[in-house]
Image 1 (cartoon, rainbow, N blue to C red):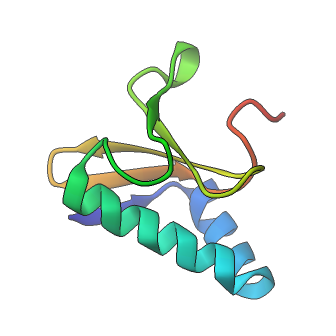
Image 2: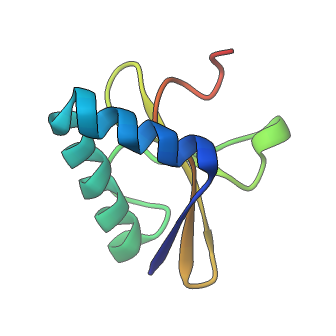
Amino acid sequence: MKKEFYDLAWEQIEYWQNQDKKTLKKISRLLADIERNGNTGLGHPEPLKGNLSGWWSREIDEKNRLVYKIDGDSIKIYQCKNHYNDK
């Protein structure tokens, strides 16, 4: 599957590349799992509601979430740092 990063998500990937390679590896594992299993699998996938209806969330760790959606043969990544409820 093709991976499409929103600008915010790409900035966050760059942050993890510089600050925490372990978290970056976890994100890579989650993305690989999404390719294999869709909206099931690692990271406790859950569908989001409200403004993010149609998107899914997976736990990267206690504080951070991967927010994504599968669109045909691509994975759109909205964010990969913080929690989607954080302002």
